[in-house]
Amino acid sequence: MLTMYERAQKVFPPAAGRSTQLGVVRAEGAYVYTEDGRRYLDFASGVAVANTGHRHPAVVHAAEEQLKKAIHVGHNVAWYEPYVTLGERLVAATGGDTMVYFSNSGAEANEGAVKLAKYVTRRPAVIAFKGAFHGRTLGTISLTTSNSAYRKHYEGLLPSVYFADYPYCYRCPFGQEAGQCDFACTQQFTKIFKHLVDPEEVAAIIMEPVAGEGGYIVPPVEFVRAVRQVCNEHGIKLIFDEIQTGFGRTGRLFAHEHFGVRPDIMSVAKGIASGFPLSAVIGKRELMEKWPAGAHGGTFGGNPVACAAAVATLDLLQGGLVENARVQGAYFMARLQELKERFSCLGDLRGLGLMIGAEFVGPHKEPATDLVRHLQAACLERGLILLNCGADKNVIRFIAPLIVTKEQIDQATEILGEALATVASR
Ligand SMILES: Cc1ncc(COP(=O)(O)O)c(C=O)c1O
Image (cartoon, rainbow, N blue to C red; front, side, top):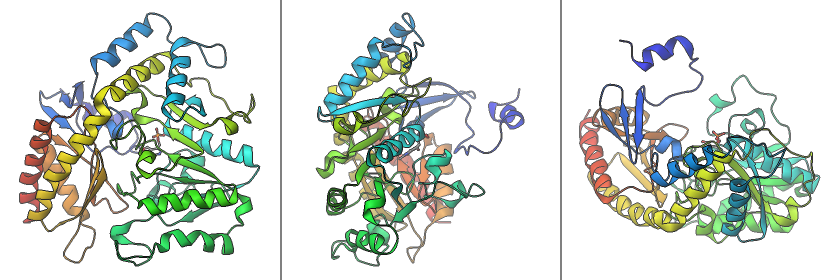
């Protein structure tokens, strides 16, 4: 009998890259089960989506109950209970002075966020960060620079997008040393405004509060506060793309809480509904109120089943899983630190909560891309699913579900240690 992978070759283009060729028949908690009868510890969580684990009973129950009532109503047609409840819950979770617009995917939420900033400021330009990932639509690849492959043959993108350097302290783009620097990264906006674009032309600065696809990079608090300050000075709207960082991933409901900085607009998706497609633009009320009917829209936004699953997801996160991400994240980081002491190829460990990146390097700090590829394969053989990130694909990103236990972290660390021992000695 052919495997799913073999059958898929005939019907799917290679465009969407896949990190494994597993054929999954069932997913439960922190594990996925494959057609050949194996079980894998899933530290990819469907790329930071299954934050409550796969098929959490409370999420399944909420979705099943909603299935009995309505599958689609259409938010262009009428109101419905889970949509309104979720809106109320998200407003309450983001300071109480916000409003919410629902869409389906992360890219769509970013499109909405940028449209909102342009609409309310009547300004054309956007500043994004080098190395960022904001999505795959034509609008959002205009903001995405985590890899030029994503933009190749699509050039002629959104105009008036300018790029700033992200504070990647392990490889400081300004040649400074982490811990001894004068935050040259915070000065760069003066130059951008002097040479590239007048600040009065800039609608928004869009930023991931922790870089995801670009390498799991945590910026210094000083930098995030400086960006807020720049926006305040020039009437620029600060958009935080919390699509990968949101919904408890970093040990706070939203990553920006770590920095004591609030955005004007935030895009969220991925973990919001434990796997149901749903996203949202969450903006300050005074901005959202200026976004009139017809200025934005979409058929499927705020699907009832997805919204019901999202309310159950929020209950779980606020009922203990965010805290578990903090506790288990600290434990996981300590275990990984032990590996860092044993293996010199593990150059940098960084992260917040259960958003942890391990950057692998050669003897001269060069990106160890091949090593990471072999390491992922060796872990997969031993039953652990891991993803990479970074422009050189030399960073392993650990995206454990927030239900993860100490025992599962021990198991993952053991597999990783064994795999590292085999690949690092090659
Ligand atoms: C930070 C960030 N923004 C936007 C996106 C795009 O989301 P989607 O794939 O749902 O369009 C992603 C997806 O990986 C992401 O990590």
